[in-house]
Length: 337
Image 1 (tube, helix red, strand yellow):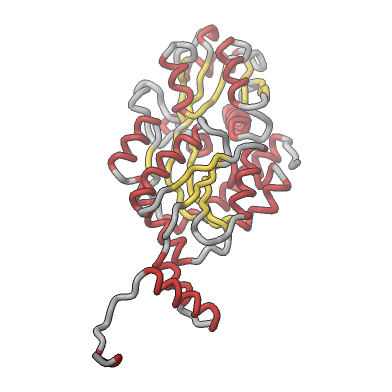
Image 2 (cartoon, rainbow, N blue to C red):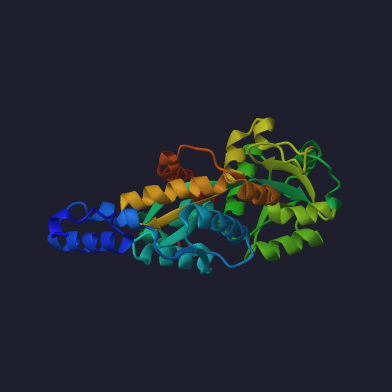
């Protein structure tokens, strides 16, 4: 058979990669699209900027399992905690922009840290938002010795005795701090805000009654609530929790800003410069992943839900929340470090 009469054979993955490499050397414009067709051809790393065992890590592992099936490659979770999420965020920003390093983004890392830490401000433009995937409610709780069982009773107590009650928060400038400071401003209350070095120490003192009030994400708060150690009075969430049907949301009570502020979200970012076709593929795979039945089941067990939004709005959402949280930090007198 002559060379001209050989039957056409489809190009394999190696052939595509070879042509893409040759196109790059010759400056041909189609090298990116060919590279995107071959993506992903190896395991993907998902950097979590917090230690293992926390809410972000737990959500990340659920997302990673979903992505394994939608991307067709293993997704390996890599915890890089420290400095309020800064160390992990820097590692994401410094990774090769090839789609093989993803990062978890949260309200704290993406919308508070840029105004709280100068180091975070430097990497703000080096991270590209991909998708807002999961939302999680927060719950405000009180110690049983406070003698209240619901939001109405709580408000009556704190209004009658301004400054007599205190709330534990996991550090100055954290989301918990902003939530309690905004509560005081909106409700005209004088709850004393006590900053701790992390959520664990704050929770310990709340359980001991050293502080009477605490706000926390619902999944980590539920064991204390179910054990009767802390009493839930109000939620910041899209709707009432099936586990706490008697507890209203701030939105129901007429305080939509407090409601929005207390809803945590978890999303994906990649290093800036990641090719647009790969970003689109990741976005589609991630949205599909969190809507899989098994993933939905795991999220429900956590008290979380898959985010339903136009993902093209995610960068604008981050920008708006940065502006909002900077204003809240300024009101609270928290200066960037």
